[in-house]
Length: 368
Image (tube, rainbow, N blue to C red; front, side, top):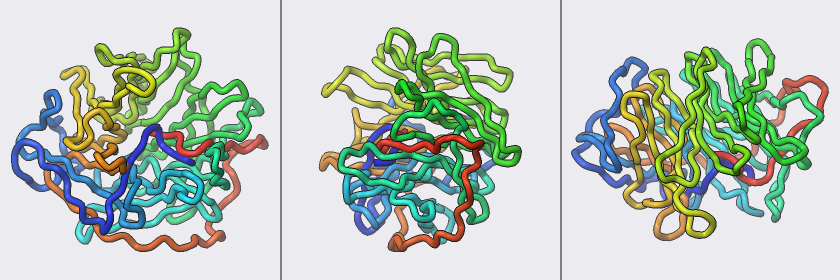
């Protein structure tokens, strides 16, 4: 599989509604000019906020929504990544008329679209494999103006199969992601699409790091594992001021997205192993931590992306074991009918944007 860090499900027909939270629906708050953070105490949303289950009709069992911009566009994919059930990327446009746009790296067997900026530039990763073991190679990519470009951190310290993923991108076209080294640890980095440069991101005391989101001020959100084996989130400011994030009482905390106002979205875990449960959260300096769980996915919710209006995207596992994409926003939405996936022409791919070095790969879904 080529995947995010959790599990998601799908709905047939593209018209599964969401489960409304407190209050009625109001116009969607997707707006670059929205400056007021939403009030979301505990698992309850303020009036006008609701949960919408949005699934691509190409797959009735597995969807993940991973990134959201300020123009009503959401990055995601369907397909669990199991053998014969490959990841297929898409961009969901919520503006009328709402639509899905298939987005798959040319010639790839699997693609995940993970991050999207306000200009419609997307990032993610692709794989040339769809193995039963899900030990697939992963290669980062960005797509701009319909052209795909492979991106892989220039290093010889790469795992086998190689794993390289881009997980977030800002409006300055600076992306963040990670690669897996030969010893199995994740290493975070920034990549400039325009400049072509790479910059390692290091967290003091971390054995393994993953950079998963970046805002227009250059602040980076992600998570790391320390020497004691505990996973915590982090927010690294533009001036490299580090804030470590640990949800009270959680066994693990992972930050996945950050908006221009410093609001972080992510997931925390309670319990371990087969008893582990996942919950979405938001955090800011003003409000601290707040739990947000999909009504039909309590204990199985992952929040991945957040925009400047505070709209959130992620996924949850429903009672039938399906992974469903979820949007938390001011309003209630139905998924549009999707266009069937067709092979993508290979002529649009470009050479890897790396120095001569082994290209990374991935192991089935490995995102958030």
